[in-house]
Length: 289
Image 1 (spheres, rainbow, N blue to C red):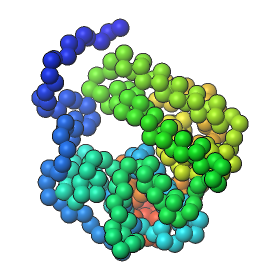
Image 2 (tube, helix red, strand yellow):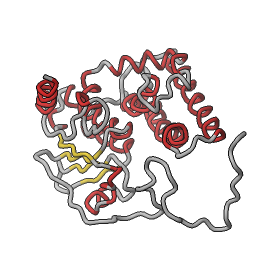
Image 3 (cartoon, rainbow, N blue to C red):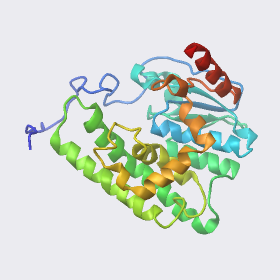
Image 4 (cartoon, one colour):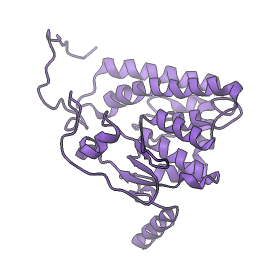
């Protein structure tokens, strides 16, 4: 073990940024840091997000609803640049006091409804449109896996992802600790998917939509450059499930929305209409020429 020993003080105090990729925006207090109104669009569903795994859950869900013919799911989506601190603007904090993406404002009724936390947004949309749910007999299974994801993914993202990819130094103990837990979670999924097509049985639901952006993209080699380190190919049932979801047109579109990084062809910074995907593709083709 090569980590140095740290003796915690009697009372912890914040002494400024602690290093790492997101140190400049991390702080131990809540609330807005500046006044900033959020933009409005033509649709009553207003999404403020970023194409991290938690953000992708919601854009995939909205695109799946539209693909299934739910025209009322048309939405406007704007990026929240978390590296610049957009999540601490007053307008965003009004929708999500926790200052995390994604945040959705639903103005389809007489009174606007704010929804934050990605799992809550998925459940709200599923119930609103009566889609991507199971029948009553399997609802508990679907909700169990939805909440499993919400409770488990922080060990993958804030745990393994942080210490393996983003921490200012690579420390053996936390990387080993969270790699072990991530592999345990992948084994949970692999054993479960060995006997069923989807997380809640025979139906593609919000449980799959919630889990795929984290664990599906991990086994597809898109998170933390850690596929080889974690030997993700050995989780064959998870890989097969992830590959099937990845091929869905709505998933491919959902991955693009509010994406500010990676391949330019996969970036659609704002989304206001289905035609935005066609325009984005044409713009990238012209630029390439």
